Amino acid sequence: MTTPEAQMSGATPTSPPARADLASVASGAGAAASRTLLAALRASVRDVPDFPTPGIVFKDVAPLLADAALFHQATDAMAGPFAGAGITHVVAVEARGFIFGAPVAQRLGAGFIPVRKAGKLPWHTERIEYALEYASGILEIHRDACPPGARVLVVDDVLATGGTAAATGALVERLGAQVAGLTVLIELTFLRGRSALADRRVEALLAY
Ligand code: AMP
Image (tube, rainbow, N blue to C red; front, side, top):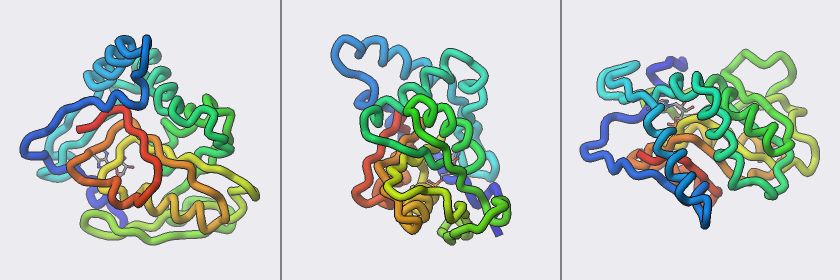
């Protein structure tokens, strides 16, 4: 059974590197502004220790979402690396993935495709079972979600172990679509999620 606890990852790293990955948004004359933005984004993410279980540091993005300018800038910056990449659809997983995925889709002029937990989607679905930290989960997508030739960007708030993103990419490919990459607000680098994503392109605004 999927529990909120089982989906959380991110035990406190012994010495957090606390670096901001500027590569996605900082280049040339815009670098200073981007550094300012990334600092503001970092300051707006609240660490909640021992939530939902002891040892997990939950990255709470609620304060960021409540700030109209920051929310807008964050989704702009998440979409930016994939502008001009021919993205036709954004695919995101409930619940926080939806919050970031929909505006990113609109920035890219792309459609939005929801991936949901088992039993939530009303139409015929393709499903995948995937490993969580302490259990397993099931994700589903509508079988007819991706038209022929779809080129998909996966969006989420946090990349932790990479299990969710890897399962989502696999689902999309089963439907015959191409996965162009993954964009997230936060990457918990100490959990090495990128290694679960093989050679996929991964863009993250903030790294911990
Ligand atoms: P994973 O499959 O391990 O990469 O976990 C990614 C999913 O779990 C994302 O959808 C996140 O919303 C959520 N998640 C995992 N760890 C955390 C964390 N420390 N803080 C907030 N959300 C998390």
